[in-house]
Length: 150
Image (cartoon, rainbow, N blue to C red; front, side, top):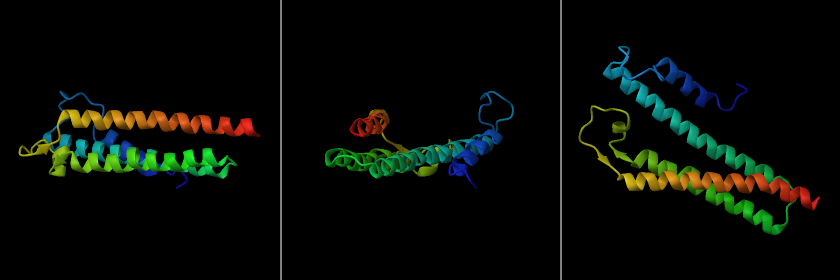
């Protein structure tokens, strides 16, 4: 397959066939279909988040191929650590630690579950959003800095 995102797209297509986008009061929905749809959505969210991490790493690899000054190369290497922490490790902790048992993320029949507080969930979401903005700005301005030195 020529598209490296085929897994992500496949999950999104599966979500569509499983009923994503239908109103909740639609007679199509049964409890089993809803749980299956929630599971597919959870999976596609995982693929999307980790796909962004891979994209950010590939941008960093491209920037390292450019002839930057030593200081700018250090900034690019620091963003590697930054992206790995905020776009890989933090989402892993959030996705697999938010609820216990894990299946309670998509199975509404599970009543005895442990969940992190809303404050922790919001803090993680804002941290990830800020990290996306910061790395996006660094990666967008790095080629401009390189062109100025050429």
